[in-house]
Amino acid sequence: MKSLVIFLLGAVIGAFAYSLYVSRETGAAPQEVEAPQPETRTLGERASDSTTGIKDRLAAKAKEWRLTPEEIKRELQRGGQIVREKAGAAGGKIADVRIVAVIKSKYVINRDLPAKDINVDCTGGKVTLTGDVASVELISKAVLLAMDTDGVVAVTSNLTITLER
Image (tube, rainbow, N blue to C red; front, top):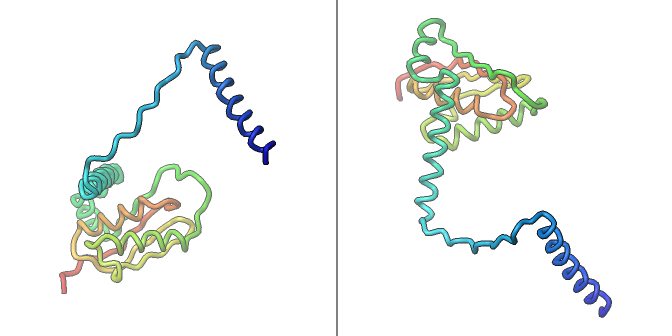
């Protein structure tokens, strides 16, 4: 036990001496470490900031991937099918089952989307959405959430708009 204490004491002294030596060699003055400041915002304020950041990020991606309601309406008038592909999808293939599970969970968490009415299929990272939603905005949101999933390389939407029941 005595030898362990001596060893640990030597290690601490050695580490201090090494850091002192390195700081003198580089000419850097030792830096003072500030104590972390306690968070003064409430949990609700922090959650609100986080949600705002996510909404802003999704809005930017909606524009980037041409998923605004106006563009969705135009494509629905042309052919009824919405197709988006990610340019240069990086990384290896992620299991299709995992992709479907992640997308479906995003739909369940998002209270606007009728998760039970949207069918998600995936083959080789290419996702196909079928089912019924209430508006063009919901088609846009469904495609956006699917595109924003790791492993997805393309999304084809065959979602149709139906009147609310």
